Length: 399
Image (cartoon, one colour):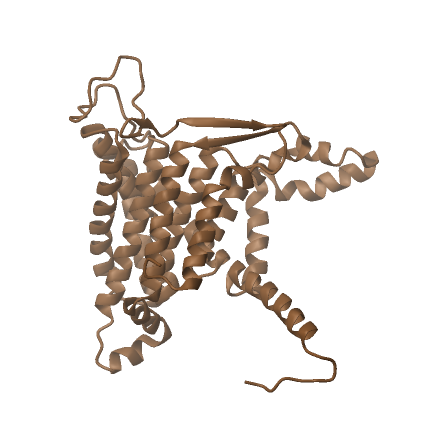
């Protein structure tokens, strides 16, 4: 189906089902309950989950397949965002032209950066990409302020030309839309004490993410993907065979940059305020952590990694001391204070400490990321089933 194997088609179907049912899956606890703190089914976070999933999928095409570690991918995310916002200011608030131009501009910029950076490999390549990203951030923040808005950033204004759109009523803020459908349009469904929100912007971003995920599967299974794996395995030996690996690595870099630009364009569709912070080196480091945490070189791993990090950033970071005191209120006062003191450094502003601990555990015990953990659990259950099906005292020959 669609050029996919049965296994890959099943994986795509699972991801599609998760996207469709996300408002239910991410809101497991009733409103007003003590556990409602962990609900994540609100539009802003759901959109970020799928958008940064796209960002991580694209990065995985470069890092997971070729082994080239870029520390500057946030530059393409930022360039794509700036291209999208200018399309909205000059042409139309419809997100389609903005997304298209964000992918094109990010692709052209990544072609330039990749053509220079891929002259080196290893740590030198990583440092070059980091340098480009920081130069891009500095240009956006303080040099190209007429284009980027500098420290304050850019957003649509009532007086913007918008050639294809009609005049905006004074006092009304222009909003991103898809052929008239407001990206912020939402419908709430109440079932008992549960409230589920269905947001137009989320489902549009989810459809784009599914398309991006499908294309990544096709890339992974294609001869082009096999050549990229050969580069990762032993590029020098590949060059000795007479194959020039540079066009393949450059193509992977550009494709990865275009994915980042796509994510940047969707971020503008979600939030039309664009700033230079999207290009800072920490944003580049974040996508590296997402990919490694989920499983570099796997298909669904980067999406899982992006989901976990964005969940922790938006949910765990909101847990303060008052919430902890409510959780441990059933304990005697002295013991309650001890537990609050122990847990508090790992939540709220200290959520990065929790992320760091999780990342270390994954790197040490699951080098293949969370996907490897899932595979181990699956193998364990399959082994138990096989042992149960094998008659006592009998063995099966080794294959």
